[in-house]
Every structure is written in C-alpha cells, then in structure tokens.
Length: 298
Image (cartoon, rainbow, N blue to C red):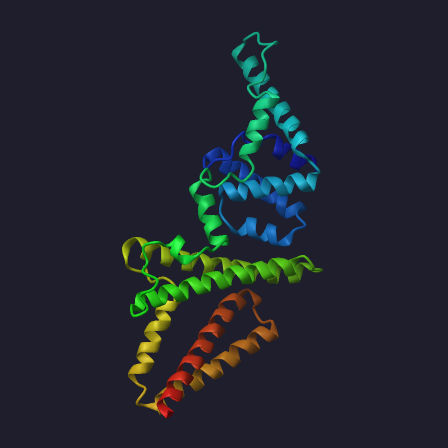
C-alpha cells in the first residue's frame, strides 16, 4: 500500500477546485481502481468528473484501504512537506537547518478539517448542488418562485411531475445502496451501479429543469418529459382514428419485445443502457395510447 501512502503524502492542505487538486485527484483514480473493494464507489469515482466532494471521497476511501487514520495522515503530509521544504532550501543555497516546515501539527489539524464535509453555509457551490440533489426538500422551500398551488397552469403541473420523479429517484437510489450492502459478486455490483448512475442523471435532469423554471419562468425542455408531452398531443390529435392509434401501439409492443429478447440473449451488452431506455419509451407509448383509446370508447 506504499503507493497509496505516497499519494496521500502529496494531498494538498486544502481541497479546492484548482489544477493542483484536479491533477492529484486524477493521479488517485488508478489506485482506487486497483485496490478498491467498494464497487459502487469505484464506479462512481471513475465515471464522474473531478469535484471537491469526489476528491474528499477518494481520499477517505484510500485512507481506509491503506489503514491510514487522521494522525497517520498528518504525519505523512508533514514528512512530505518537510522534504519539499528541505529540497527548496538546498536549491536556494540557504542555511535553513533550523527552519520549521510551513505546516506544523496544529496547521495540519486545521487543514484536515477542510477535508471533511463543510457545514451548511460554508460548502462550495458544487457541494451544495450535490447535497440538494441527494436530499430533496419541500418543493415550496427549494423552488420558492414557482406557484405550486396554481394547478390550472400546465407548467406548474409539469413542475409537480418533475419534482415527484426527483424524489422517487432519490428513494430508489437509497434502496439500491441498501442492496449493495449484501452484494456478493462484482457483476451484481456493476449492474446496481449502472442503476445508480441512471437515477443520478434523472435526478440532475429534473433539478436542472426546475431550477431554470424557478428563475426564468421557462423550461430548457431537455428532460424527456417534454418530448413525451409532444407525443401525447400528437396522439390526442388523431384520437378520432383508433385504427392508426392501435397500429402505433402494436408496433411499440413488437419493438419492446424485440429489444427485451436482445437483452436476454446478452448480445452486445454495452448497448443495454440504451435498450432499457428504449423499452421505457415503448412502455410509455403503449400506456398512453391505451389511455386515449380507453377514453374514446367511454
């Protein structure tokens, strides 16, 4: 585990969004891939970009793997600092045999605190965004400019749908984390990790739409829900032609089954993520057209 300790010894005093920390983070990714046992965390760190939060998670996990506690971490960093200071003095030709390192134990202790999650109000913008994404609150408190009680406004109806999806993705992701406690194989862990990543993307997409709408009164309309609304409007426009609607539904049923068979066969598994997205789209088509046909019959 010496390579991990070497990486930890070069840990910056304070984790920030700068080139030095970014380089240090990327230098640690091969170590977590090589030694990491927490498959979900390894997957998360290797698929997400650099951030202060991810850098902190990486540091803590590598400390755990190498058996380095806070006291040992301070010693590693203090030793490295003293070495760098000595080399710097030699290059300058200065007599600094009695000079103390820039970071004394007290300074290191203070620096160590910077590696822990900061309290609310002191967190970086990115850390605050991550917390919002993980802990949905009351929508009226989180998005104060949206008129949540205006049920006659179609945009507000969409806002309710987006927030519900966001909350559901959070709870589903939490449930998967609970499942991971009992994972016994790498394959199962990777499958669950993919689910977590998809849920995280959905969470962020919903949050983005709501944030923009809250500030500007309009949606960027990047979330699939807006494409779905357009489809429903198009199907409603031909509801007088049940033959055409049924034809669209039958095609969706056949395509859904064909895609499911491809997944079952294990053919080109790297395409499964896109296939699952297609299946969800087919299921949406089947469900919504069935609703329209059912209303027509009534």
